[in-house]
Figure 1 (tube, rainbow, N blue to C red):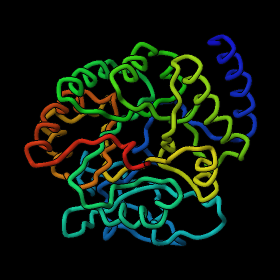
Figure 2: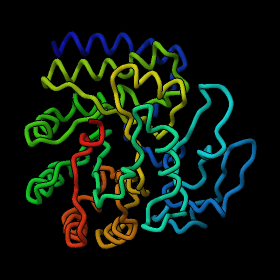
Figure 3: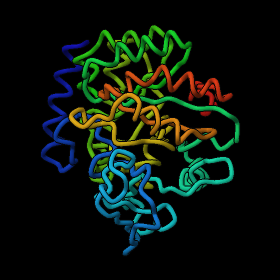
Length: 312
């Protein structure tokens, strides 16, 4: 089955490359990179033109505490155009009375009925940990150790390359009761893909994981947080719940890591009820800080929950 899956994927990958479905240069899950989530970019410091929210240079927005602020984002309140208009998921600073990001709440209200999760809007003191896995950088084992010691379950969104290169870690995720989610075959911007290409991107990885690990995935994360009405509906029709996030920060760059103490401060200072936290497993800072972050959340009355409970 492995040989069959690899051959099939190679054949289809050639088709994807020729047909214009734009993949990232490296499957490194840079969801907060040029087209990724602007978790801390202050919308009051941005400009809005033709429905596209453009942020100033990231240095003006406090460095590591923001995602790549040079990216252009489309604000949730300014959506329009065709049903395949690219929507780049990003967050501003505005919070409600209990610290929840307003943008996440608006997006949940707008898209929650279409099998999409941005935040748990129940006001319960629940937090959901998710990790994106584009390539293995040597820290996932330690992350799994920390989660096991703390008795916490998380969701790991994997690409095809990750599954092929680190099958032992995928097997461990499953064996230890974590959720494995689909992050696509080649990490493209989905609105640039045709319906057939979207199906291939999702199904190749879905079938590979099912055939090689005996595990059927039901959660999906759009690469770079880029989706459209069409692609969101297509994922729903394929039986997937699309999981976004209400917290992310610039942790994906392995060559530009904060200290563990800085990572702890960045993550815990954005603690909020119902939070869906996107962390990249390539980050040494995340790995080193994770145990203390979990202890902080628990000591402040938060429960780190299983995100599958939100899809029931």
